[in-house]
Image (cartoon, rainbow, N blue to C red):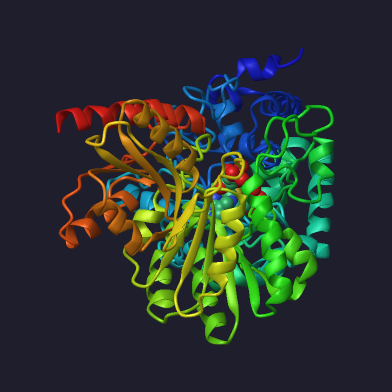
Length: 629
Ligand SMILES: Cc1ncc(C[n+]2csc(CCOP(=O)(O)OP(=O)(O)O)c2C)c(N)n1
Ligand SMILES: CC(=O)[C@@H](O)[C@H](O)COP(=O)(O)O
Ligand SMILES: [Mg+2]
C-alpha cells in the first residue's frame, strides 16, 4: 500500500477526486516520502513536514493554475511539487534536478521563484489587480506566508494595499508555526500567540471536531450557514484586532493538521469574494520525531542526514561561520560597546555563542534586514558598535539603508556577510554574488574578503575598530581552507607568492586573489610560472576601496589578473582597472568573476566549472590573452 495514493496523484484534480476519508493516509505517505528523500539530498525538511495538510487543502479548494498559488520564500513548496506531478526528488537542489523552490521552468503551477522572504503578499496584490483589470475577477489569488516572513516590512506594505481592494479575490494564508528558524520575535509574534492560545481556539477546535464527527456533511453545511459568508467570516470571538483593524476579514485560527478544518476555512474564504486572512496553526517538523524534538530550528534546512536518527551524515558544513562565532565572542569580551544584530537567523549566522554569553547585547529583529541596518545606525549614534550578521544575498534589500542611513551618517557599523559568493544548491536567489559590485559604490565603505581563518579573525578585529564608516567582512559557504601564509605585507597588501622567471625579458604578471578565490589565484600563479612568466600573487584582504598599494603593484607589472567570486561587472577587478586608468597606468587588467546572470542551482564546484573559474580555465584564458598581446 506504501505510496499508492501518492503515486495516483499526478495533478491537483487527482487530489480533489480523493474521498476525504483517504486524505490522512495521503498525508502520511507524503511525510514518509519527504523524510526518505530529503534525508538523502538535504533541503527544507521541517517547513515542508508542517504544511502537508495545508497544501492538500489548498489544492482541493482552489484550482491551480486557474487560481494562483504563491508561496512566500518558497522553501515550503515540496508538497505543492508532489501534488502537481513532480515526484522525482532524487536530485532535489542538484544540477538538473528539481529546484528547492518554486520554478516556472518546472511547472505552470509555480509562479514566484524569489526565495527572499516577505514578498508573496505584494506578488498576490499585483496578480489580483491584473486579474481585475483583465477580466479574470472570478479567479482567486492565494498567498501562503509564514509567521516569520510576516515580520518583514514588505508584507505589511502589501497588507495595507490589499485591504484597499475589497472586491479582489485574494486569500492570505498565514502559516503560523510560531517559528522562523527559532521562535518568531516581536509584537506580531505575541499577537499571533494570543490568537492561537486563547481558550476560544481550543473550544472551536473541539467543537468543530465534535460537530464533524457527529453530523458528517450536513453538519458541515450547518456550520457554514451559521458562520458562513461575510458575516460568519468573523468566525470565532477572538481578539482579531490587528487584521480586522486593517480592514481585512479574518478566519481562524484553524488547526493546520486537521485537513478538513483547513478545507472548511479555505472554502469560506473563497466564498467571501474579497481579501481574507486565514490563520492556520501548524507545527514545523510535524510527524518526524527528530525534527519535532529539535529545539534549535526543527530541521529548518538540513544537509544529508540519517533518516532514523536525523543526525548529520557529513561533518559541519559551516567552518567559516564557526570562526566568526568564536571571534565575535572574543571581541565582545574586550569591547562592551559591541552588539550583534541578526535578521531571524541567530544560529545560522553563528551568533548563538555571543547570545549565550551576552544575552542583552544581541538583537533578533525578525526578517527585517532594512530595519537591521538602520537601527544599527541608530545604535552607532548612541555609542555602540553594531555588528549586523546576515547572509550576503539578504543584504541586497537593505542597500538604501546601508547607503543613506549608515554611510551618509558615517556610522561605525560592521556588516558580516556569510554565504558570500557562490552558494549553489539554493539557486539564483541565494548566491551571495552581488555584494561587492553593489557596495563598491558606497562612499567611505570598506570591505574585507578574508582568505582563511587567520585573516577572517584579523578582518573582524580591524572592522570593529572603524567607528566613522561602514565596514563589511564577507566570507563563503565553502569549506574553510588551511592557513595561507603571506610572504610579505606591502602597505596592507599580502604578497603570497613570487615566481621569478629564468628569462629576464619574461613578462611580469600580477595575480590578485579575492577571499575564497585566493587558493585558485595561487594555482593560477604556479601554472603561469610554468609557462615561463614572472608572477606575483597577492591578496589585498581589504579589497574595497582598492588599496593604493595594489594600484602601484598593477603599475609595476605588464599584465594583471583578478579573480573573485562576485559579479565581474563592477566588481573588484573592474575597480582595479578603473583606479589604474585614473593613475595613467596602462597595464591590462583581465578580470575573472561571476557573469551578470541568474545562475541555475547546482553545487558550488559545478558552478565554478560551468563559469570557467577553475585554475585551469583561467590559466588558459590568461595565456591566450598574453599570446594575443
Ligand atoms: C529576506 C530574507 N531574509 C532571510 C531569509 C532566510 N530565511 C529563510 S526561511 C526563514 C524563516 C521563515 O520563517 P517562516 O516564514 O515562518 O516560514 P517557516 O520556515 O516557519 O515555514 C528565513 C529567516 C530569507 N529567505 N529572506
Ligand atoms: C530559505 C532560506 O533562505 C534558508 O533557509 C536557506 O536555504 C538556508 O541556507 P543554508 O543552508 O546555507 O543555511
Ligand atoms: Mg514560521
